[in-house]
Length: 450
Image (cartoon, rainbow, N blue to C red; front, top):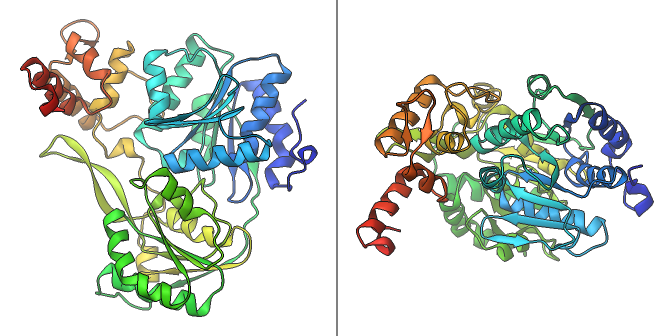
């Protein structure tokens, strides 16, 4: 019988009442899709329930929880460890690129998507893992799509007992439930009302000027901490220069939050402070990470997205408008513990003209790295069962590039990796860059090439 959060003295969350339904669905079907509104507690309460389920059944493997970003993985792991009354690194661990905090007792591991792909490359059967949880799956990165498809393949071929959970606040559950032959569990949220305000007209001023104006208004008119969504680290630095005096004049504290910061600075940015805090953040604070002191959100309406650049043959990050769904998710960060407010730095007309949902990354990104992984695992990317098939042009371009790099052989009945391709697949970089490193090493200039 799964352990109730209430028996551990934890505050009740909406998902608690449905943990029995979730574990029951996993016993019956081995896969479940959870649509949980913000504030439901899915990230912190579902993984421990899966761990308890496995223990009740005598399983000894780990539960892996995939988060879209390193900060989300670290914060979720720390919160779950705290709720279990343990230090991080004991039962609950975290593993992201260049950082692992886990031990011999670790059974619940929060990881980023790339960590799962590396594990699949080393062992496609995922031995020692009892369940894989794809959190915030609506973000639909190439890595999460590929990880889901490969995990499904492992269940279908060698690990029928492997359990899969997909969780999201905004995902349409039916397509992924059909893909996995999974049950669907819907969980109500615990979100407070948020008063959303739009710009009255288009503002031609630089973004940092508009942000400074929004921060000034927020500090004068609203209580609580302020969370500002900006597209990237460069915009955060420029906005910080314009906002610092405004925040300090109001007796507040300015914090920056983006993926390039050291873990210590990221943790400090989301930690409660005695002073009012203004947090300038990229999309790392959109989901998974709850900052309970935030009651006002300022949304630039922009984010960095990966797009294929034909002239480089690589994916690059470009600034684009977020979808309506992501804008709603951003505004919801102001209403996690009490009623809040959100100022969007764009007009209502602009909002209404945006796409309803973001396109999945597989529809717009370059696929050479994913294609090479599939080939080295023995799959034919031309027939592989993706959750959502990539465009034929992208698939063809990936084949052409890998063939030019000498990474794959298309001459046989099936697509196969070459010796060079296997070496490229072992490098944590794009095949084009990896080929440069290998060639530099062959010419005695490995350090320079790297």
